[in-house]
Length: 104
Image 1 (cartoon, rainbow, N blue to C red):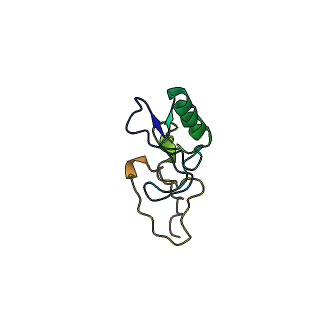
Image 2 (image 1 turned 45 degrees about the vertical axis):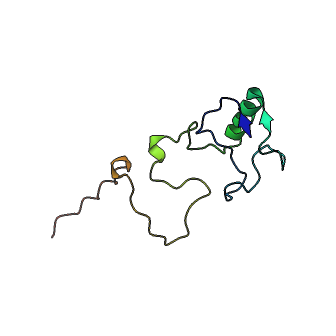
Image 3 (image 1 turned 60 degrees about the vertical axis):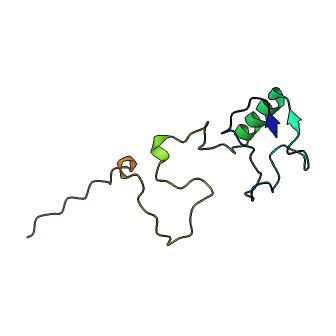
């Protein structure tokens, strides 16, 4: 799918992960991946990808800062997986420790 004058960072999106040049592109009939399309049609496909949630966390539809360090919906690792803390400066503050009574 090529659009005249399209920016280089707006690449076609496959429906499922695939090797380069393989897989089915979103809203493109098989065999028509390299067909020329009008700018309006290309932009319409891009808007449809956004509405379908395929651009979540990318150029548009970025995630809020509060969601940093949390797994994306549908991508949680199996229980027991070691996950590094990531960007510590964006982690929520730990809850205050309960006050311990003085020894008797």
